Length: 150
Image 1 (cartoon, rainbow, N blue to C red):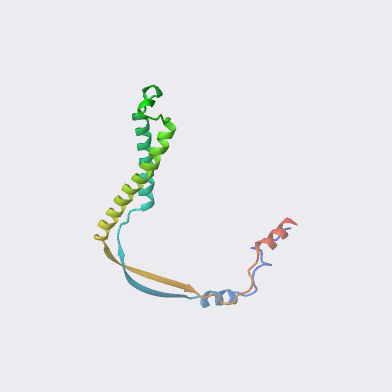
Image 2 (tube, rainbow, N blue to C red):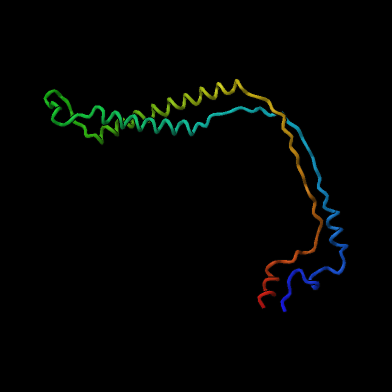
């Protein structure tokens, strides 16, 4: 025969300690009210990432739009042939910082415009604290599991 936590042998003899612990744990509430400015702000990281992506796409388009073959190059006039990979790398060095700068400037302009549309909102903060009295150690689940397995 196994014992379960709900058996009469595990129940307290009197219910007085349980009632006493529920009465002594009265929640204590305190409320404060503040006025807080609220406005919408653009995420700079998102704008900068979009600038990187636009710069990458622009470099790719420019690389393949103006690609010249080695036969079109006249070395006697001082022209130098660069492979498409080299041209793409050079254009990345230029287009990514330009894209980041343009989209960063756009985010900053949107941020300045959002400052003009700031609203003040009243918020209430409620703190609830429950003071727990010194209670007996609770019955652990590990010890009842050991009894059930026997």
